[in-house]
Image (tube, rainbow, N blue to C red; front, side):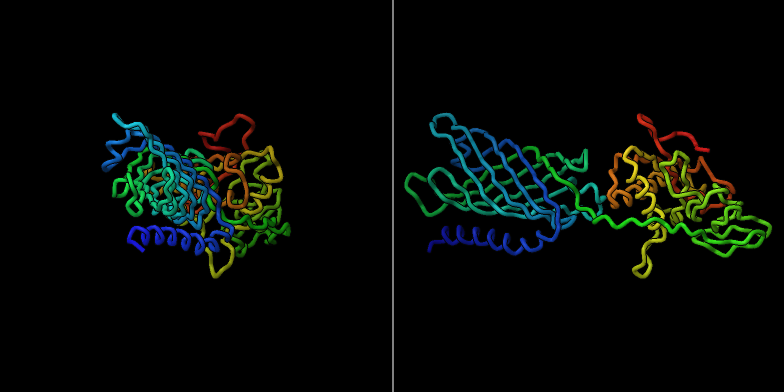
Length: 387
């Protein structure tokens, strides 16, 4: 068998092995994606650069995301180049290939933005040119801008090489090489965690006797001697924003229902100078999970309910920095609720920085918080502090 035939067989073998070895991984509940590519193609070597003028390259690439970085894809592509001056026959090639797409920075991007960003791919397999069966491969490099969770679009540059089989009459020896420059359109949805069951926080209040120092319950322990707990929910009156209604300390004693129309304060325990959600401890749910899960359930039960998630920061540091930090905190809570199955468009976010401290204003923990404000139809997030 000649070297050209060995190369042809090896290329097809690599494509087949790649496909079969990754199918099992792709079947594990990974996300389907589709990329469509349109480009201008030019020949890089002779005789193609002489025989053909610039033409078109079109490709469809269905695939499966195997994670945030790696995707398996299959491709059908067509290359069509008109005949050049002095030649009568146009050129055409059809590609059936298997390959991998790599997004090197995918692990650092949000879970909802997994179609876009920098990518590189390699594809190899069968090529049909006229009456000839050949092998070929291509290498692509591009960047996708993602205007929506389900769509990305951006430039892509691709190198194509069609391997020349054994010498054939009337065929010039040497591989055919083309460069394409065009746009890649990505369709699909980002891989997301499966929604977890959302159970409401227990209705049984945390009892705290009046006129004594309350034990630590949840994340608050601001009770002082002489303070009262009017509704006996474990949040003493000095910090209870709903003194006649039962609610957990994490919401300052208010019922967990952001759709009621009353602003709901939630003390997500953001660390200093951070928008990270509270870390998991020994495989137990995060500290805020039960409260945020109940909020997600309340929103899901009312299809008409839209809420603005407003982030806040304590007054340490520069105002501009704290404004950005408060926005990041609201986005962190929004991402958590999206993972519970809520649509992002029902939960716009904003940041208020340090402009709206709670009383007592000196409590740094109280000011590292988010608030949920129900929005009526056509309303946007508030730009001023809520009562």
